[in-house]
Length: 198
Figure 1: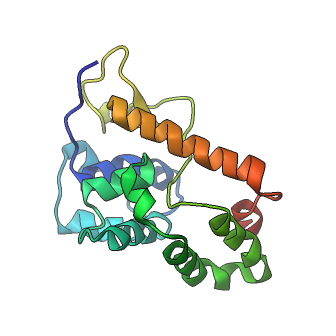
Figure 2: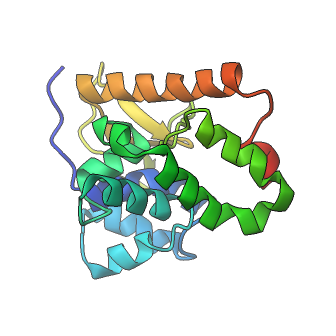
């Protein structure tokens, strides 16, 4: 398996954030324009403005960037940390994550916030930890990831292929996904975020 070329952070963000945006969840109303940025690999201020409209993902990118001293929340390392996982996650402490969650969710969840906060105290980290098992590669013939080959490992979000993974990235994705599965299944005795956010 050959090492994949590194995708710029803003384009990597489009690859992961587009699938739920396409289904009408989170992000800008104009999912087609957002898709075109990713398909055309165009990075400009317009893309950055669209990325900031992701009320779920954007604050986590800001949190990871701030905790690690990286100025740009769309820096490739930050985007990879949130969606796939990498060592930056080890630098985000429980307190900053808890403060971020409180600021964003306490007013929405009321008394159920304690259940959500418990997941942070139990060891939660700002990693997306959600992937699907069926794959979509293109929309009307245009795709976000090109030149895939048999035996390539890829990451998925919703049903979309988001990136070709290196061996290091594959290991990180497996590690952080398993970490959260173990956290939810063995350390928490309720569904936490699911119960709090309905």
